[in-house]
Image (cartoon, rainbow, N blue to C red):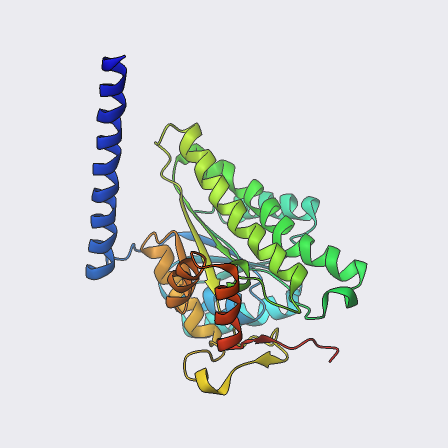
Length: 307
């Protein structure tokens, strides 16, 4: 009995010391800003490159010397992004028309990308839609389309490109969630559900690879939680004038820059602005009514499109 207790105490002490070490390591990297990985020569596949964040990601990655592969359901807009990149850099962008919610299309495009460009080393699941209605006013098709694109599409794309990363034990997967994937937002009930699902998908996949590889997997994961972004999806933003300086719509260009920085620094989770992630985590420790009072105090969100 005593040896067993001693064994438990020794393991507990070891765990405590590991926790202290990782806390120190995390503080060190945040204070001194760990160096950014080069993306020169990397093959970066981004979904939803026809406009908004996806377009800005494509441009900025190309400017950093990466080979960009852009997927979008609207090939005309996709080609316009590629044209802008040609005017700004010497690096080409490969464009493919693809509905990410269609598994057959995704795997057909995967074969083309592998043959025509090579193995994707950085994958960014970005494509998404955001109709804004009160819950009972969503149509069946709108709800199904939200889930098909915002989370099922992420799953198909990741299933398609993850095997080559596992084979080479190298790669980075980035997923764009949302602040609504951390705290529920009225008039975005199904959208918020898909963004919570993105967080769960990334967290669980990362853990599965860690366990299945016995800690030897070198594939990195980053989940990004942006506040409202000025892409046209937020048609009727609700912003408390008292906090308009800190709770304003983010520009797609700035958000893309922060996403790339997070990927290059191996940041596992990042909110944009960064204070949201910490603030919401702290608020979650409070009684539920206290959390509601905080939400009422900031009074921010989105009005329904049908209001």
